[in-house]
Image (cartoon, rainbow, N blue to C red; front, top):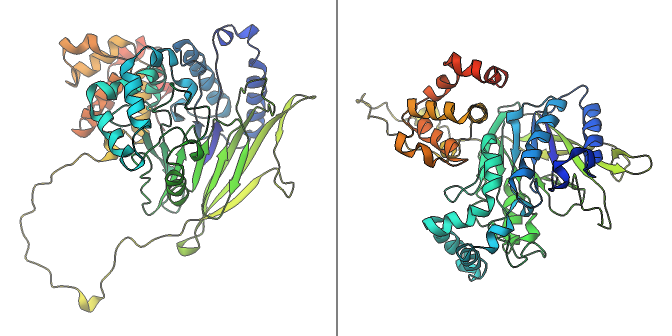
Length: 447
């Protein structure tokens, strides 16, 4: 699988709204040209954007970002529904933070809580309908942008995760998108390391057999109050790690994990070490049993001036490709009893009726096919989305006018939990919707 890692794009209005006079545009053009050349023989399977998509968290900035990311996906051969995003501190609308005492109080309660009780305070704030909604209100524009990509966050689930394709050898790649901005936007908490909070709620990262965990967060661990707990959990449970925020192109390789820090696509031009950058990473499973490893081959790219072009950031040995084998052995999932110790078979009994319990994966809409479904659903007109939700009895006419940007995606969750896969049929069946929508449904159909 080939991954494209971007971070800190910083689409800034009003500059980004007028492309002919946008001073950052040439660097994005150079990046796309370099990426197309790198992907001449192998296309990109997923695009990972580790935050700071916008600059002030305004809707117009996200609209330009959405168009550019889809353009980049098309150029690199990546499906547009395989774009994954997390919020950064510049994706937080600080004007909303400053105008709300509820937001200020909720963030302060978490930030000032005693270390041993901070997790409990966070849970309390998220569960409270008023303070929970307030914590995510500054991310409203981000959520409107991220909802079609299935990457919105909320008090019910402050992060997202998706199971991607089989990497070979029965290994599943699981992406975890963490929200590092829960208390961003006030008191300059993003200006110095150690002042934000991630919490154990987001670092469970269950190390299941044959599941390769990949973590994506805007802020690296050192920016959190719970730095050591985050660093230990991520290093122990996530062999692949992607961060942004610091605008420094770095690659740390060990036999247990590989950590990438992406240089900003559009850093501030007054920065001392101003170098736009991005990463292309190939991963595959090699070997079997206890000798099995995940082979990572990374191309770390950075802009060079005079002549202006992207070039390789080389290893200490002068290699253009950073290669690392991460030990990822197979594990037994159960104990097999010796034949002579097998208990006698019990008399057949009538099977109990199965009781379905919604799993975290279902709640998170974590299937890649479901992500594609959400992407196509969001490309419909509002009237078409309402028609589908009425048909599936997910909303009533009395609630139709109260549906916000990411409520439509949430409405698909009950259908999934109830086994109402008619949602997929509803997107494919009405031919008049496809005709009205210019054939986009067929274009975005999953393979």
